Length: 294
Image 1 (cartoon, rainbow, N blue to C red):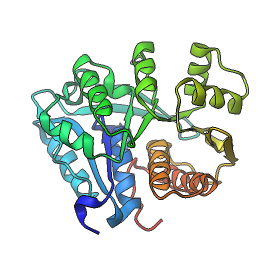
Image 2 (image 1 turned 90 degrees about the vertical axis):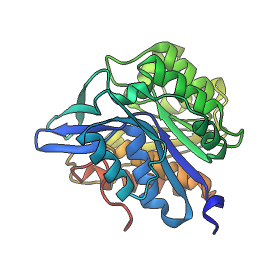
Image 3 (image 1 turned 60 degrees about the vertical axis):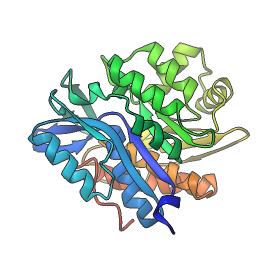
Image 4 (image 1 turned 30 degrees about the vertical axis):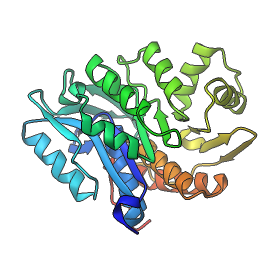
């Protein structure tokens, strides 16, 4: 297949380093998503990241590692601000909590004419709320999503990270998305905000209708996940695994969903594959483990 005709999958938002007690790993939800999509999609897709790093060693290392994952880095800018970092703490079950360095390079993602061109070429764009915590990056991300073609999959991964949670940003993102991925905590937040039913499937049905979404996915940790579209839903249990940490598992889950939608697979098959890959990521100390063999 001609490279220009391969579907283009993009993650837009933060590039950062997850700093664990044992050391630092490349991270950031859009970055994790792109690396997973490239690893799983192989030669049948093009994958890129739209973000910004600092003019520093961490920025140089991030670009090198992203390129090694077969992800295009042409739309990663540089800033005089520092490359993003987040201090990660893990509880006894490997579930992560985060403390972010503020005023990082990715907060200063600027709009360029080249972004307008690449947005129009995108088949999938995945974006979250954290990458929009500052006005400059927020304007760029929302403009980018709105510049995509009508048939582009615009996946909003809610990705709540306190204290960087803004109701208006969530609302704006839901309005410009056509697909949604969230976890139990994020569903609870949306349920309170929009008075959704207590039953998860009924709540997802309400979100599908309210925001005219093509589909919505709910990850539920040990309880597995739900994938729903208007008139159809599937629920599967989690795959048993020895959890090392959960960082990046949701992003890999989103990557599998996006690839499955592009390949027009049945929703039941997509969900089963997404749970399996997310489980694999949970068993590894990195948000971007090698996935090519899966």
